[in-house]
Amino acid sequence: MTTPLVDAARAAAGDPDRLYDAFVAWAADRGFALYPAQDEAVIELVSGANVVLATPTGTGKSLVAVAAHAASLSRGERTYYTAPIKALVSEKFFALVE
Image (cartoon, rainbow, N blue to C red):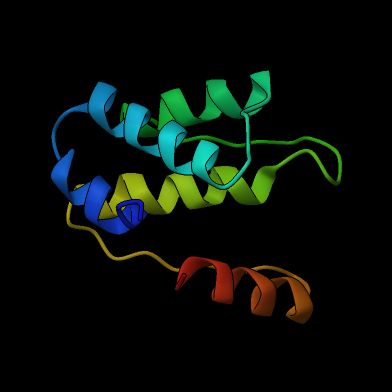
């Protein structure tokens, strides 16, 4: 069984490279390989930068949002997820608590 992302994020606190590796491994365990835009965004997020990701529907913005949550949790911060569509919020809620 793989380590939950929240545990991996907290274990990687203060180490952006370790956090990046933990997130990529977590995503790979779920069958996801990062697209270039996702990869760039995740690198920036784990480094503490603010990111605006403007890509078309279906290009993995929600996966980057999960990375943003992991980066914040690794710093001991509180996170919130919001989306304009109730079905998307419901879907992502159950994915995040997994």
